[in-house]
Length: 118
Image (tube, rainbow, N blue to C red; front, side):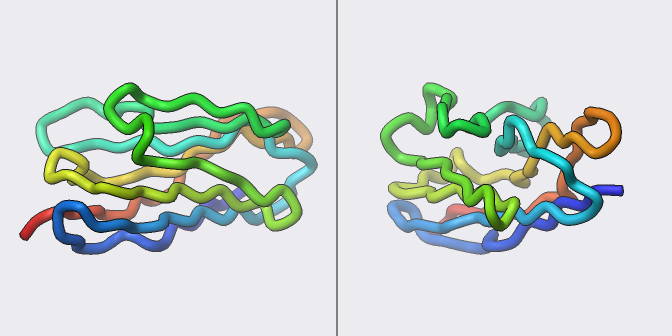
């Protein structure tokens, strides 16, 4: 079994910064794509950013230039650096990873709340 554990959420003022972390553990052979999604109240879950095993990244238009996704393959960890936060970034942020154990499957973290408010 694979577990994804997120950390780093919290309350921040508009214009502030946060860094989210997500560590994968378990019987992992390889992790392919890792990503961050978010879900605001009353809205569908949406992709924020993704990163492949070789470091290629993609971002939602709404966060381009403000958020940076990165990963440490040795630690099976993905990060999301969020700068210039806006109230509309408020959501529960979820980590997602495509993991090869003896089979390939997608896994989700439990979510971490990010609230941007003055």
